[in-house]
Image (cartoon, rainbow, N blue to C red; front, side, top):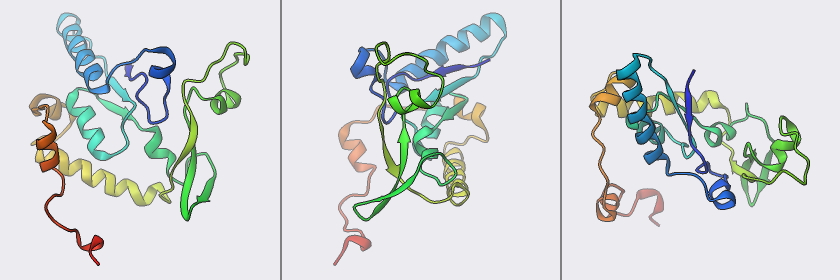
Length: 190
């Protein structure tokens, strides 16, 4: 058993707009982690948490895990690869891959949503994500980036990341300083 966290924050999700429900993913993970940990202290039963939504990079994985999630779901990330469903198309000189949200009309037509058009309303869109080739070329890079983040945080595993990570809210100035700044990158010169 596990608890999946995330409502209305997927890359193509319209739940918050359509139903005015949902929560920021970081806040949801932190609050549910606190409730899970209190439940564990009382009952000695550990319930894993799955962060679902807004996670498209190794950095996003690390943040979700640091906040208390045990694993993540990454629809947008995996949709980019040739091994996922959807057609590869060329749009404006760029290759893209079809991607549709679980509560989109396209998903309803594919599988489990047996509601009629009169009772179904869309909570996600269908669209495109950048095509990135084979997952087997990208996973080793993503894995190495995640391992490097764990190393920087001094964590050998997810449990250590849960216990040892210090998270803080950054100001806009601190965020700007954390990005490349006051330089012209070589690939942009000329």
